[in-house]
Image (tube, rainbow, N blue to C red; front, side, top):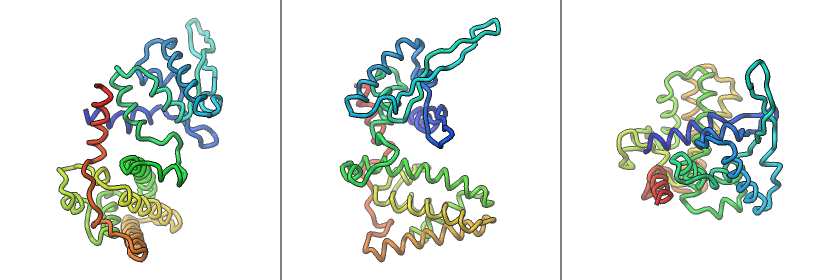
Length: 275
């Protein structure tokens, strides 16, 4: 079950994401139809209709999230015709998944995934404050996942090949010399269990700051070697640690480990959806 869930979250949905000329992300309804395993377009259109109604009831402008577009398809004999499609925002996809057939495993997984996502790409401070601790954890974990991906792309251009060494350099700076394995052992985690999935929102936020600031520093300084990249990551980790100390905060290694990992919470949510 874990493998299927990870595949859905990290691959299936993101694989069909598009970016327009202005840098905005969007999805096409016909492609989402295939992912959600709807064989007939007419049945999927019914789902879209319900999603549009939900959008309207939430006081959002439908056309901003469900943009009707034409798609040319080959019908044989060197001829083609235009068929209806929709350019969907992330929020539109959220509504569609919420209105899809929950008996489909991929839909149930999708509902679990979106249940802990904000309707917007970013939350305002007021909206964030209203989230539960677990919702904050999911939100921060999603940001750290994206941040690490972006950081890895930059680090690769800077000459980094040993990414375990690179990331441990950052952890050592932030955690007073602890590597990722040291953190995992201290938290009592099983082999290869994700340490970020076992952090509270405050600890995740500290790591996110380390990640984003390291990426910015590598870019600004035009770093060209693995050695300098690791030194930079370690230095930023120490800077974040010192900032926490000066603010009178709790050191990352002293923050309590949550009772349940995010993976365990997602599994429980998935099971509840199937009941």
